[in-house]
Image (cartoon, rainbow, N blue to C red; front, side, top):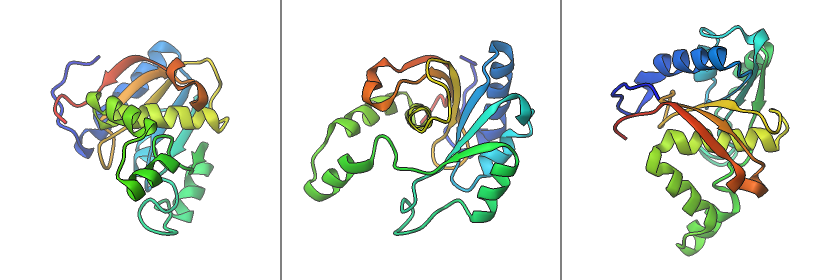
Amino acid sequence: MVKVKLSAGPHNTDLVLELAAKEAREQNIHNIVVATCSGATAFKLLKYLNPGQFNLVAVTHHVGFAGPGVDELSPENRQKLLAEGFKVLTTTHLFAGIDRAFRFKFQGIYPAEIVAQSLRLLGQGVKVATEIAIMALDAGLIPYGEDVIAIAGTGEGADTAVVIRPAHSHKLFDTKIKKIIVKPYEF
């Protein structure tokens, strides 16, 4: 892991993307999954990578996250990402979905929430990076059994990058976080 004292937040985005791209090249990892709501973080990633050499997957919030029927990724940015070679995944979040509906309705805690909170011990970015890697695998956008780089953050932008070998969601505990490239020191 890179030894830098980062506080969580979007001000780390360029450094995180640079370190993630460097790791991808050095470790010959060709699959990169990036969390992005508006597309901004994914577009910034292009500054550090030649898109033709990588399988790039942009994972957005699900439609309705920001409000009923709201898709935070504009149709224009979705088309631009696709034109740049990204695969774009907009779907229910792995650690939310039905469990979150039960939590909202009945004020309890459920298995997916426990996993999410446990991953947050390492920071919100580690939780999101794990989540989006598994979601991309379940959607068939990255290959099974290979290490990928997952980039995520706390709120907007990116402050975390990990090397992870995701398992399908029904085999969650076979997922391996192999390396934390960078994450906030404080979160």
